[in-house]
Structure formats: C-alpha cells, structure tokens
Image (cartoon, rainbow, N blue to C red):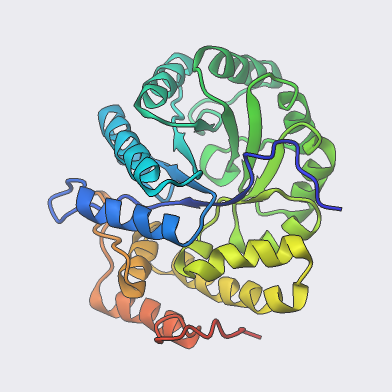
Length: 313
C-alpha cells in the first residue's frame, strides 16, 4: 500500500531554526546542539534556511557556513540523514549559484520554491526555472510549494509537469488544502516523493501515500515526532491519532503568538533545545507571550519529565 518514488527522500525531515544571539549573530554552539539532538532522535533529514530557519535573513555566506557545520555534525554522528538547504532566490541565476555553493559545502539537496510574489510565473517560466536549477545547480531538487508566501501555487497539474524534470526528487507541499495535496500525491508520486508541510495534515497525508513530512511540530515532540511517522507507515492509527491532536494544538498556538518563527524558537527553549532570538525585523516574544507558549506545551504534557503527548479533543 505504501510506496515512494525515491527511497532516500522520505520520512521525517526537520526544518530547523537558526538561533541568533541578542545582537543578531548566529549562535553556532546552540545550532550545533540542536542538530546533534535531532540526529539522536532519529530524523531522516535536516532542512536548513527555510521559513523556520529565517532563510530570508541569511546571507549566502551564512548558508554555506551552516551547511558545512551541519555536514560535519551529520558525518561525525555516523548518520545517514539527508541535508537539504533552501536556496530560493527570485533570479534563477542566483538560485543556481546558491545551490552550487551549498553543494560544495556538503548539502545533499536543495529546496527551491517559485519566485516570491514580486514576480508572477507562467507554467513555461516555472518549467524553465526548475529545469535550469536542476541541470546547473548540481543537486537533487526538492520543490517547495508555499503559496501563502510566494502567491504562486504549484497545483497538481503543475507538479505533474515539473515531476518529469530530471533531478527533481521530492516536493514539500505547504498548501493547506488537503484535497489538493492528495491530488498531487495521486498525480506525481510515481516520479517524486510528495512530502507535507502543515503538521495538522500529516495523518491523512501519510496514510494516503505521502512520503513523509518537513513540518513544524514534530520537531517539538522529540523522538515521538519520528515515531509518529513510523506508526502511520505501519498502519498503527490508534497509536498515532493522539499525536495528531497534540500537533493541532501546538501548531495553532505557534501561529497565533508573535511573528513566525518567534513562537517556535520559544518552544525550542522550553523543551530543552535552543531557539535563540529571531532576526530583525521579527521581534522576540515578550514574557506574557512566552507564558502562553509554555501553557500550551504544559497542557500537551511536553514539559513533564515523561511527556504524555495528551490528545486535544
């Protein structure tokens, strides 16, 4: 029942935050500790410089440095986790250049979205963009569909066409329409691995043939965020169902408090990882907002010595 197009591009890939200090500099020690902890929890991939990682705020040099650092941590841990780096830029040539640079620094793949809302794209322009990046960037490409950010929706028809491009191996689908997502699975999963973004839809996605998730929420659950995927693939829906409801509560709170990813960074701090500060113009949460995040995590059992992962029904 459960098949994927590419055996290596599946499972649980955490889109990690980039911890900054109060002055806006990258806290490499905190970043390294987070990566090591995620690898210890059994993740199948690490995704850098996405929305969670404030990729928009990172210079190309910083992306390269974080890629090299993560590569070293993965190799030293003896992990087989894939390392994917966001390289999206509006000009295709800049996207190619960024992709080549992170390849040289040790990335296994690049996550590439359409241009932002500043530039609309026809199907022929999207095809040209992805053909060029896949051909000249030197890395396997994970498509990134996030129309809330780009105002360009990679529909099932478009993904079907893009899936024929040599070098495109997967899709992170952050469109929040589960109907569109499952239609994309049906249309394209024979050629690429269709992975999910919004954690509130992981349950139906994986059960209906999705290849895994690059989501916010499972990274807050520790080892349980990986076991959730394993249970769904195995068909253990009764065991997995409570995690679905827990993720609903967490995701709603993190989206409602502060500007993304400030709330997620606080959640990292509270569960024993290191979120650090966001980069301006995003502001860190104030004390009252932090307490709201704490309350949600406490009610979900995530701050107890033995997390209960209580269902929110």
